[in-house]
Image 1 (cartoon, helix red, strand yellow):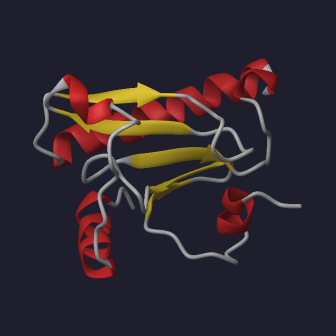
Image 2: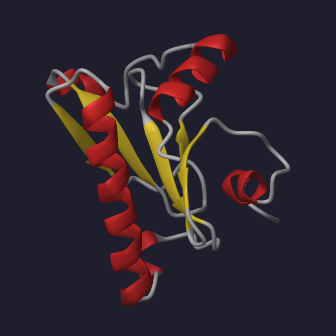
Length: 129
């Protein structure tokens, strides 16, 4: 069965897209820790990030870096934090999280509930294309 992220790649589930190329996709997390929390995924479904072949892994990281640099320019924050947890969805993904304090990256705290309008507006501001 395809992961929710594979279904997003296939267009079966909509997303708030930030960036895309032939191999990778970046979109807003709909249950963010902070506004601008972005997920970066390979389009090819792979459960565990460290099972990705070396060349694709490096390309994945470079794509995430481009997105992170872009987010930092668009969002008022001290840094963009990076997390790879990989337990919640069986599809490799990188969390890019705007940080102003350490607690901004605390996955145990309550997630934000942004409206569709807020997510659409944020995605428009953050789009790279």
